[in-house]
Structures are given as C-alpha cells and as structure tokens.
Amino acid sequence: MKKIPIWTSCLLLAAWVCLPASVRATSLFSMVFLGERVERGDARSIALGGSSQLLPDTLAAMSTNTALLSRLNRTTVSASQVIAFDTGSSVNYEERDISASFPGIMLAMPIRHFFTLSIGYKGRYDPDGSFAVPGTSSAGDTYRTQFTKSGGLWSIPIGLSFNLTRFLEIGGTISLERGFIQERWDIIFDASGFAPSAGFKKEEFDAQSYSVSGILNLGSRIMIGGIWESEIDYDTFIQERYSQATLDTSYKSVVKLPARLTVQATAQITRRILVAASATVSDFSEFVGLEFPAQRLDRGEAFAVGLEYGRLFRLPWRIGFSYEKLPYQHPGIASAEPADVRRILFSIGSGVNIFGGRGKLDLAVQFGRQGSRDDNGIQDRMIRFYIGANGSEAWRRKGTAPF
Image 1: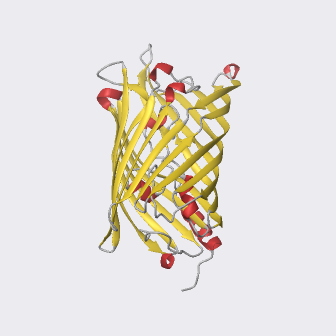
Image 2: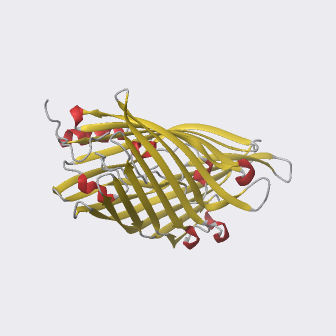
Image 3: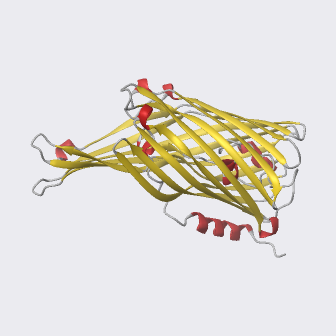
C-alpha cells in the first residue's frame, strides 16, 4: 500500500480541525471566573474518563504526560474536535446551544529512538457564553441587561521526551501562555426614546510556564505516571470602555494561576482489558487577580477512572467516569452562602485504525451535569461529542498492539 507522507496527513488534519466555528457552547459556568477548563487530551482519553489518563500503547501525540511521547517511533500529528450540546438553566432561565471547538493540535517528531521533540497548540480555559436578565427601572420602564463573555486562554507547548531505561521515561515542556477575555454588557429598554447603555472590558494575558512529567514501568503491565505543572504568572493589560467616554480607562495587572499536580496509574489486566485512573489537585486559594472574591476560592480536585475492552465486534470499547470539584464556590437559591460546584460526567467511546494502520480515528461521547440550581443557583446539562484523529508517516508496532 502506498505510504501517505506526513505533510499530507498534517494538511488533512489541519483542514479537518478548522471546520466548524471555534466557539464553545453556552455554559453558564463558562461565564464565571476564568471560564470552563478545557480537556487537553484526545478522544480516547476522554472516553476513558478524562484527558489526564495515561495510556501505554497510544499512537497519539495529544497525551498530557509528555514522557509518553518518547514511545513514538514515527513523526505523528494529532488533533481533536468537540461538538457540544449544552443546556444552562436557573430558576427562571434556560438556554440551549450547539457549537464546536477544538482543544488542540500536536506534532511529535522522534529525533532518536529514545528522544522525541513535540510542539503544538492546546486550549486552557474557555469563557464563551451569554445570557440576558430582565429588569424594571424605578420609573416602571422595562429593560433587559445582556451579558456576553468571549475569548479564551491557550498555550503553545514545546516538549522534550526521553526514554531513559525500559523502566523510566521522563518529559518536560516550556509553554508560551497567551489569551484574552472580553466582557460586554448592554442595557436595552423595551420602549423607544431611551438610549442604550453599554460597557466593555478586555483583558489580555501573556506568560510562560513549564511542566515536568515521568512514567515508571512496573513490569510490562503496570505504569505509574505523574505531571507537575508550574504556576502561571500572567502579565495582563486591561481596557475598559463605557457609553460615557470620560469613564474609559486602561491599566496593567497580574493574574497568577496556581501549580497543578496529576498522578496516574494504568494496568493491562489481560491482553484485552485495560484499566486507567488519575487524580488531579490545584490549590486556587493561592490564585491572584480578576477581582474574584478570595473567600470563594478553594482547592480544585478531580478524579477519573476508565476501562477499555478490545475487541468486541472488531472494535475497542471504552467507558469512563470523572468527578471534579471546581476551584471556586457559587451561591445557590436555598442559601445565600456559596457552595461547592461539582461536575460529574460519564463517557463512552471507540476507535478504528485508518490509512492501513498508519493512523487512528477515535470517537467519544461525554455526558453529565455540573452545578446545581439549589446549591449554586445555576446548572449545566452537558453532552459533548469528541473526535480525535492521528496520522503519521508509517506506523510500526511498538509494545502491545494499539487499540
């Protein structure tokens, strides 16, 4: 079979990943704090519970553990696409939306059989969303206040991976951190004769960060991994614009994201059964910036577990579960006191080899809920479809057979 050059695969993946608009579906929690945290892995890891999972025989370059890329033996490009169906609601408000975005695209290039260089793009936070609130002035005139938030934070990671021994692999990245968040609010009266009032705020973010990761192989069936991501110290430039130009202002500030620690474990129970689990923690009580109430910030925690069975009906099948406590609290209806925001998701997926084994196409469906109307005042019901594609010059099997 004729070999597909890597540059052809890159062009195909780049064209595919840029198809629908790069806008996140309307999630009410994406309007809070920095926005919704982006799942930075591929569709296979999402199907197994989340992007933090460690998968030993993957042929993809989107792994969150950079050390895993030392196992690639061909230049590989990976990309993923998300189609989201979200329903956000409160006591007197509900909105449904459908949209698409892509978490990232990565290119990994083995320099030697034990050394791999990688570069790409990965989203970090997605703040896109909008909603309207009705109101009545003291004179009895009705109006609505329209809130809109857009933009996002992203990174360009440059990574190195080393296969030191058959028991130990290490990796690290240096990332350029960029992004912006725009907020706009408009007060529009229903009756004619009233001039609308508006405000606009834009925050631009600029920073660098780094991470270190490692994998310990306990025999041929068990792997333990870890990732430590440094704090991100953003320099921010803020512009504020209002209907009254005399109120316009610009200034500089600082936003600090805390460090993040992830531990991972994977076991190949049998030739067909793989189990993966991971846990992540980040202490946002150390967060600085955005004028967010410090007393509502807390430690963010996440846990994921997944199982893969291959093959059934000539396909691998994956199921997963994830639980996350968001790093901030939000007041609810039953009490004015802020309460923890919890996110509970289930997932299922599968995949096929393409290009005669020189690539892979993975699919995943993730569904669940975050927040509670009673505890947090708002909640989201979420259904997400993930599509992941991987292409390379020529696949050569390494270790266990890829699923």
